Amino acid sequence: MANLLSKYVVPGCRVDLQEIEHTELDDEMDEGYTLRTAGRGYQSKVLDILSEDKIEVLMPMEKSRVVTLPVDGEYDLYFFTEMGLYQCYARISDRYKDSNVFVLVMDLTSNLRKYQRREYYRLSCALEMDSRPLQADEVRLAEAGRRDKRMPELPLKNSIIADISGGGLRFVADYAYDKESLIMCRYRLQVDKEEKEYNLVGKVLDVKEVENRPGTFEHRVQYINMDTEEREEIIKYIFDEERRTLRNQKRYQ
Image (cartoon, rainbow, N blue to C red; front, side, top):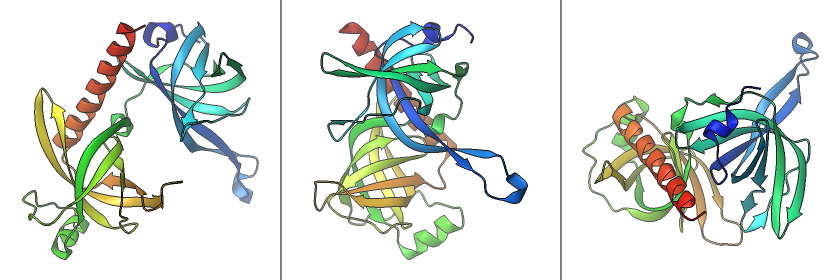
């Protein structure tokens, strides 16, 4: 294992855990092979660096409850550092509770590497967004791989973005769009010290009612026909926000 961990990863930095699932293939041609796929994802933070191949991570939370991940569970880890995003594989070797803090001990099972697929970095946030369904002519343009940036001014519905990436976003609202429908998303971001408005077309991948919040719906949206420049600006905003969070954490440690 290369001695890279402590050079890039510090206590307090965000780490995303992506569950790794193993599926035995039944096909005769693939008999004896196991397919490795991504399962559920969780967001947490690094508590301590025990060695170059062992770390302690805060057990993730969902809806204010601790998620007790199993010992021997395998995960894809993504570390958000001041020098960019780094990835490795890890296995949970132990878990314990210390003064009401639930801790995972994780053994790294691969080398740390710089992760390049920046459009998939997700930033948790609470940003205001307006949206509406696309009109029939806009849908035809979108399905043809085109987009008219001069979108007509039609009534918009309010919502809150819960997380955002260069590839899409997740938002909550007191209404529900149809799954697979195309919508226009309008929101503003602070990019290079200037506030910029974005009017982006997205496809609704999933819709579900939020648990214990009747009438509130969570939507997962993937951008389509997006300009490279717009994507890069959003990614830059995400990394600027992550760096700002890291600096603030260090200041109060």
